[in-house]
Image 1 (cartoon, one colour):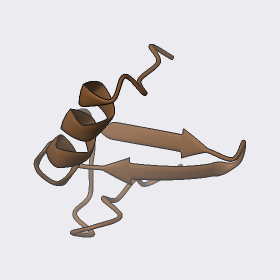
Image 2 (cartoon, rainbow, N blue to C red):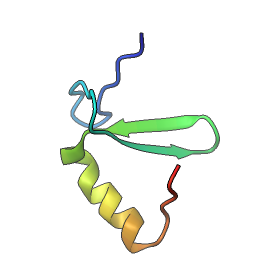
Image 3 (cartoon, rainbow, N blue to C red):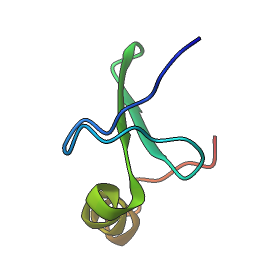
Image 4 (cartoon, rainbow, N blue to C red):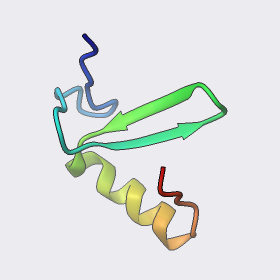
Length: 51
């Protein structure tokens, strides 16, 4: 079983998660509170994909 934790606040994340993937194998998970500024930046600069 894989337990996901926010890479910023280290809180355990169950359902609502923002996940970034870059360089094929590097994945970062964020809770909604910590990931909102990252999401807004990616959205503003049109760097999002729907995967």
